[in-house]
Length: 327
Image 1: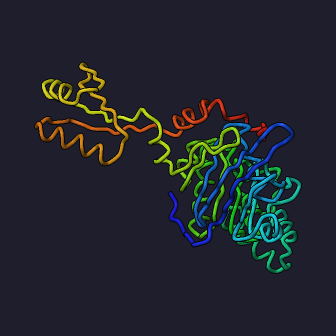
Image 2: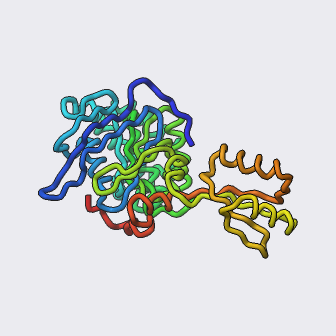
């Protein structure tokens, strides 16, 4: 989890955001509040409205209703100021594969109206920071998927944006490349950058996000830290292991509604996984002088949360890497 660099002014604030295409309502009045210097993750099944949300917040399309401020600027009244403050890395790479890594970065520097000397300095700095120095003058067409994504993100950073929108940034990457990208994201936030992340990899949101919002059918159905969301879902329990059959039997009688395995000498006690419930259980066992051999706390994961909130497992909601979200 990141260390937040909070300011009084949120990086992103949206109220009553709505968008429809004909009779299809894609966003139905969502509110967003993203503190500066944090990672905010938006989860949801295909068609939930994630990409539409990003497109509105990055000025690519207009909302039908609602008010938005990005980096303190009014999205409707000051779109150019918003564009100057943000960077966007989409689901599909913006890298020109006919150009080298260095040429791609210099092209972005020109688009950002950096001077020739400043552009070259910035390109060299990013090539170093993203471990691309050795391939700086090789065509991007020769790069691996992980290298392309690193270059894509480096191009986004040419203009030193304060807020970065990452729309499915690790789709199609192998586990090692994905974790490398996670480290880069953490380092950006440690430097004060705000990250707005959409992803269908629940582990990614769990590992990175300070706060997570779940979008379904154009509405936010839940928001909180990963821990807070997991506590919304029943099924958590504390597993107790005993070495003595007598202690096992006494605990089973004392604790009441538990699930037991007499052969393995284990009991599962329903629990929200919180410190208070754990302390209460241990105090109860201690008061009755029941010795426990081992203890494990089990809480629902984000897959359970996703299923409970959207009615679909995350694996079913995730599309193939080449697919584009419908909304």
